Image (cartoon, rainbow, N blue to C red; front, side, top):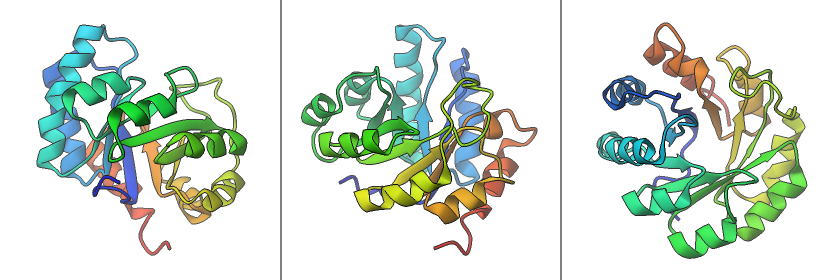
Length: 210
Protein backbone atom coordinates (compact mmCIF):
# COMPACT_ATOMS: atom_id res chain seq x y z
CA UNK A 1 0.00 0.00 0.00
CA UNK A 2 1.13 3.53 -0.73
CA UNK A 3 3.09 4.85 2.29
CA UNK A 4 1.11 8.11 2.16
CA UNK A 5 -2.02 6.20 3.12
CA UNK A 6 -3.79 6.26 5.45
CA UNK A 7 -3.72 9.85 6.60
CA UNK A 8 -6.85 11.48 8.01
CA UNK A 9 -8.07 14.95 7.16
CA UNK A 10 -9.24 17.05 4.22
CA UNK A 11 -9.52 15.50 0.76
CA UNK A 12 -9.59 18.58 -1.48
CA UNK A 13 -11.09 18.14 -4.95
CA UNK A 14 -10.24 20.64 -7.64
CA UNK A 15 -12.88 22.86 -9.26
CA UNK A 16 -13.48 23.10 -13.02
CA UNK A 17 -10.71 25.66 -13.57
CA UNK A 18 -9.77 26.19 -17.25
CA UNK A 19 -6.60 28.20 -16.55
CA UNK A 20 -3.76 25.88 -15.53
CA UNK A 21 -1.69 28.62 -13.91
CA UNK A 22 -4.63 29.79 -11.86
CA UNK A 23 -5.44 26.19 -10.92
CA UNK A 24 -1.92 25.68 -9.58
CA UNK A 25 -2.09 28.89 -7.56
CA UNK A 26 -5.46 27.96 -6.07
CA UNK A 27 -4.32 24.46 -5.20
CA UNK A 28 -1.02 25.61 -3.72
CA UNK A 29 -2.76 27.79 -1.14
CA UNK A 30 -4.86 24.84 -0.02
CA UNK A 31 -1.92 22.45 0.13
CA UNK A 32 0.12 24.99 2.04
CA UNK A 33 -2.71 25.25 4.58
CA UNK A 34 -2.52 21.51 5.23
CA UNK A 35 -4.87 19.70 2.86
CA UNK A 36 -4.28 15.99 3.29
CA UNK A 37 -5.05 14.69 -0.18
CA UNK A 38 -5.81 16.24 -3.57
CA UNK A 39 -8.08 14.86 -6.26
CA UNK A 40 -7.82 16.35 -9.73
CA UNK A 41 -11.28 16.65 -11.22
CA UNK A 42 -12.30 18.79 -14.19
CA UNK A 43 -15.53 17.74 -15.86
CA UNK A 44 -15.43 20.53 -18.46
CA UNK A 45 -11.85 20.14 -19.74
CA UNK A 46 -10.75 18.48 -22.94
CA UNK A 47 -8.57 15.38 -22.74
CA UNK A 48 -5.51 17.45 -23.62
CA UNK A 49 -6.21 20.05 -20.93
CA UNK A 50 -6.87 17.36 -18.34
CA UNK A 51 -3.53 15.73 -19.15
CA UNK A 52 -1.77 19.11 -19.00
CA UNK A 53 -3.31 20.05 -15.66
CA UNK A 54 -2.81 16.65 -14.04
CA UNK A 55 0.84 16.63 -15.10
CA UNK A 56 1.32 20.15 -13.74
CA UNK A 57 -0.25 19.24 -10.38
CA UNK A 58 1.98 16.21 -9.85
CA UNK A 59 5.22 18.01 -8.84
CA UNK A 60 3.23 20.51 -6.76
CA UNK A 61 1.62 17.72 -4.77
CA UNK A 62 4.95 15.97 -4.36
CA UNK A 63 6.51 19.14 -2.95
CA UNK A 64 3.90 19.09 -0.17
CA UNK A 65 4.03 15.29 0.27
CA UNK A 66 0.35 15.10 -0.70
CA UNK A 67 -0.99 12.22 -2.81
CA UNK A 68 -2.51 13.20 -6.15
CA UNK A 69 -5.57 11.19 -7.12
CA UNK A 70 -7.06 11.47 -10.62
CA UNK A 71 -10.84 11.42 -10.93
CA UNK A 72 -12.42 9.03 -13.44
CA UNK A 73 -9.26 8.13 -15.36
CA UNK A 74 -6.88 5.50 -14.01
CA UNK A 75 -4.98 5.40 -17.32
CA UNK A 76 -4.09 9.09 -16.98
CA UNK A 77 -3.10 8.50 -13.36
CA UNK A 78 -0.78 5.70 -14.42
CA UNK A 79 0.67 7.74 -17.28
CA UNK A 80 1.76 10.64 -15.05
CA UNK A 81 2.74 8.56 -12.03
CA UNK A 82 0.00 9.86 -9.76
CA UNK A 83 -0.65 8.14 -6.45
CA UNK A 84 -3.89 6.70 -7.77
CA UNK A 85 -7.35 7.21 -9.19
CA UNK A 86 -10.92 7.58 -8.01
CA UNK A 87 -13.57 5.70 -9.94
CA UNK A 88 -17.35 6.05 -10.03
CA UNK A 89 -19.88 3.52 -11.24
CA UNK A 90 -19.23 4.31 -14.91
CA UNK A 91 -15.48 5.00 -14.84
CA UNK A 92 -14.07 1.56 -15.59
CA UNK A 93 -13.52 -1.62 -13.68
CA UNK A 94 -11.71 -1.40 -10.38
CA UNK A 95 -10.24 -4.86 -10.81
CA UNK A 96 -8.72 -3.85 -14.15
CA UNK A 97 -7.32 -0.64 -12.69
CA UNK A 98 -5.79 -2.57 -9.79
CA UNK A 99 -4.23 -5.08 -12.17
CA UNK A 100 -2.78 -2.39 -14.42
CA UNK A 101 -1.65 0.05 -11.72
CA UNK A 102 -0.27 -2.49 -9.28
CA UNK A 103 -0.60 -3.07 -5.55
CA UNK A 104 0.76 0.29 -4.41
CA UNK A 105 -1.72 2.48 -6.29
CA UNK A 106 -4.46 4.11 -4.25
CA UNK A 107 -7.83 3.33 -5.83
CA UNK A 108 -10.99 4.92 -4.53
CA UNK A 109 -14.56 3.94 -5.29
CA UNK A 110 -17.73 6.03 -5.16
CA UNK A 111 -20.27 3.98 -3.23
CA UNK A 112 -22.97 6.65 -2.85
CA UNK A 113 -25.51 5.32 -0.32
CA UNK A 114 -24.82 1.63 -0.85
CA UNK A 115 -22.93 -0.56 1.62
CA UNK A 116 -23.19 -3.50 -0.78
CA UNK A 117 -21.45 -1.52 -3.48
CA UNK A 118 -18.68 -0.75 -1.01
CA UNK A 119 -18.19 -4.43 -0.24
CA UNK A 120 -17.95 -5.21 -3.96
CA UNK A 121 -15.46 -2.38 -4.45
CA UNK A 122 -13.16 -3.62 -1.70
CA UNK A 123 -13.32 -7.14 -3.11
CA UNK A 124 -12.33 -5.73 -6.52
CA UNK A 125 -9.31 -3.95 -5.07
CA UNK A 126 -10.45 -0.54 -3.78
CA UNK A 127 -8.10 1.11 -1.29
CA UNK A 128 -10.86 3.27 0.14
CA UNK A 129 -14.60 3.76 -0.23
CA UNK A 130 -16.45 7.07 -0.52
CA UNK A 131 -20.04 7.65 0.56
CA UNK A 132 -22.33 10.61 -0.11
CA UNK A 133 -23.86 13.01 -0.61
CA UNK A 134 -24.48 13.51 3.10
CA UNK A 135 -25.89 17.01 2.62
CA UNK A 136 -27.25 18.98 -0.35
CA UNK A 137 -24.37 19.60 -2.74
CA UNK A 138 -24.01 22.40 -5.31
CA UNK A 139 -21.76 20.14 -7.38
CA UNK A 140 -24.27 17.27 -7.56
CA UNK A 141 -27.70 18.61 -6.57
CA UNK A 142 -29.45 15.33 -7.44
CA UNK A 143 -26.99 13.03 -5.66
CA UNK A 144 -28.28 10.14 -3.60
CA UNK A 145 -28.57 10.84 0.12
CA UNK A 146 -26.25 8.90 2.42
CA UNK A 147 -26.59 8.30 6.15
CA UNK A 148 -23.78 8.65 8.71
CA UNK A 149 -24.67 5.11 9.78
CA UNK A 150 -23.07 3.94 6.53
CA UNK A 151 -19.71 5.16 7.77
CA UNK A 152 -20.09 3.12 10.93
CA UNK A 153 -21.23 0.04 9.03
CA UNK A 154 -18.31 0.29 6.59
CA UNK A 155 -15.77 0.06 9.40
CA UNK A 156 -16.00 -3.72 9.00
CA UNK A 157 -14.52 -3.45 5.49
CA UNK A 158 -11.13 -2.56 6.91
CA UNK A 159 -10.39 0.29 4.50
CA UNK A 160 -10.50 4.05 5.04
CA UNK A 161 -13.85 5.80 4.56
CA UNK A 162 -14.39 9.11 2.77
CA UNK A 163 -17.43 11.34 3.24
CA UNK A 164 -18.50 13.71 0.46
CA UNK A 165 -21.36 15.97 -0.49
CA UNK A 166 -22.30 19.35 0.94
CA UNK A 167 -19.85 19.07 3.83
CA UNK A 168 -18.92 22.26 5.66
CA UNK A 169 -16.76 22.89 8.73
CA UNK A 170 -20.01 23.22 10.68
CA UNK A 171 -21.41 19.81 9.77
CA UNK A 172 -18.24 17.75 9.25
CA UNK A 173 -17.48 16.77 12.83
CA UNK A 174 -20.43 14.33 13.24
CA UNK A 175 -19.26 12.54 10.08
CA UNK A 176 -15.74 12.30 11.47
CA UNK A 177 -17.14 10.95 14.73
CA UNK A 178 -19.16 8.41 12.72
CA UNK A 179 -15.95 7.11 11.16
CA UNK A 180 -14.98 9.30 8.20
CA UNK A 181 -11.23 9.25 7.76
CA UNK A 182 -11.38 12.01 5.17
CA UNK A 183 -13.94 14.62 4.20
CA UNK A 184 -13.94 15.41 0.48
CA UNK A 185 -14.78 18.96 -0.53
CA UNK A 186 -14.82 21.07 -3.68
CA UNK A 187 -16.82 24.29 -3.29
CA UNK A 188 -16.49 24.44 0.49
CA UNK A 189 -12.79 25.06 -0.02
CA UNK A 190 -12.24 26.52 -3.47
CA UNK A 191 -15.31 28.80 -3.46
CA UNK A 192 -14.61 30.06 0.06
CA UNK A 193 -13.49 33.70 0.46
CA UNK A 194 -10.28 32.37 2.04
CA UNK A 195 -9.58 28.80 0.88
CA UNK A 196 -6.61 28.43 3.23
CA UNK A 197 -8.72 29.39 6.24
CA UNK A 198 -11.46 27.03 5.08
CA UNK A 199 -8.90 24.23 4.84
CA UNK A 200 -7.79 24.82 8.41
CA UNK A 201 -11.41 24.90 9.57
CA UNK A 202 -12.05 21.48 8.06
CA UNK A 203 -8.90 20.07 9.59
CA UNK A 204 -9.97 21.31 13.02
CA UNK A 205 -12.90 18.88 12.86
CA UNK A 206 -10.42 16.03 13.21
CA UNK A 207 -8.87 17.38 16.39
CA UNK A 208 -9.59 15.28 19.47
CA UNK A 209 -11.45 12.69 17.39
CA UNK A 210 -10.51 9.03 17.56
